[in-house]
Image (tube, rainbow, N blue to C red; front, side, top):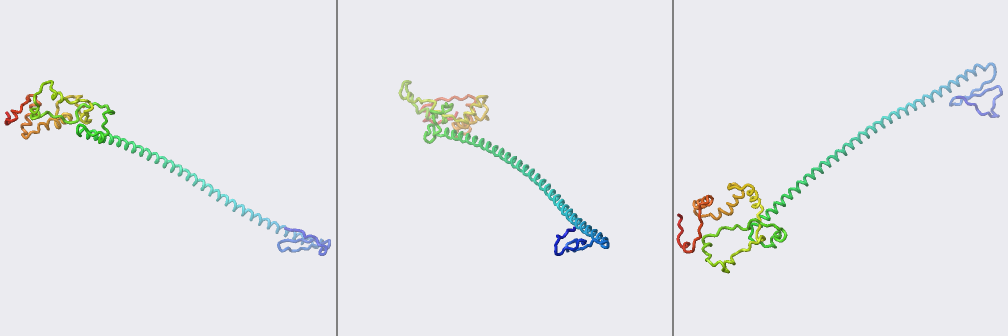
Length: 278
């Protein structure tokens, strides 16, 4: 690159002299406009142009190198951007999948918990019903008139249930009991006092025994394996035939079942005699 120096009156060369500077060192060239110096001036001009062209080429190569580096940086940043975008999409998909799995697991656990809760409620209801039935069974096994304050669930005014069986097990009177009564006239106050008040409120129902009776009533039979008849034999018949002589008990029971036995009332005189089995 060539530049002209600013003129200085003190150092100005003659009119026929041309001054050039070139290069970083500021080389001063003086050319005189004479016929003898014309070839040297042309060579100097060529050299100056060559130096300027070389410097421009260096700057161009440097700019191209910087541009190439910037292009490489842009490509590298684009690759990083694409990789980050792909990772972000993959992470987003993974997060959505994980969220869906968590929601599905939560729904399954909730459904399982609701199922367990429903089963537990059913079990509680069954247990409460069994407890209530056991309470009723225990109450019906107590004396005929339980204390109301000890058994508040017995409320004759609210339950409205009319029992079918008496609470206690009524057994046939023994011979001694039959003979202990004296004959009285029909209108005697003593005989009138013997009547018992058969009010429905004085009766209670054994729910288990009642259910067995209803089942037997649908298909009446005399099968001893039937639960209803089995309880009748166990609680009503066999205890009244619990004799020391087992064969006698079996004979009486068989006669009762075949309806070939006769029961007669005896008086006190006969009781004083020794009983004889015929």
